[in-house]
Length: 362
Image (cartoon, rainbow, N blue to C red):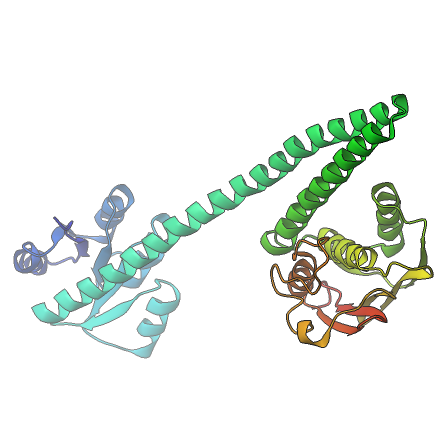
């Protein structure tokens, strides 16, 4: 059974209240009040979908009543009955009372019915939207806690396995057994890299920007130290160029996502030959920051260039990528209001150019 619409009607004339209630009580649950003060008490203690008030009442006009109603209970949809329609009253009702609709007096029953039904639809839609937003906010908060808790719970055991494996390799001499431990190390490293990717994916797509002052040299030095512990970079020459004289503001987590994934791709897709290099060039000026990461790796074929920023797309048969890296780069850049240009030539190398604006200057 459909719940009947709850309506509150305020008017200072008993005849109007009685006729309103008699005419509409079969379709709606109607409560009435003889003045604005009684109406406010009822609206404070009861959920109404629609509140209707006469404009001309002693002590407090309909507009003044709605203005107070918005403060104590803004949810009901408000309808103003008025026997006159001067522009000042209309403007006041819209601006102060946030009135949904005006109905001229004397009103007719069908007009009132339709107005109540339409207003109730708006009330129910707003209520549903509010409930969904609250659920989304709760889910978002729980997801934040879940992602970081999950990464911590997974990385702890992984680091233990990796540490034990390294200790075991120091104590055994049998090449076959050492090979088994090397396989364990390779698997734990791959899983740890995937966990990092998941965290980066969440940061780049789900978390709002947190704007801070960015010092690229500090970020890049820290990241390179992490890369050296994570990967064997001995055979790759790394060139760094950082020119930052201006203050720059952005989201540090998303900038790390961009640098991490661009460097990771440049490392993983190197050619199996000598003379490998990766170049990172960063310039900051009053217009923003330019990040350029280039390499002399295997490059990207033309047929893949339009798709490399898509989720789970791989531009090579090498089983080293998750298909997430460049997608997360694109998502982070878009959330930072920047843009990216990719240039790549097969067997020659790849250059990715990123421009980011200062978020405090937008």
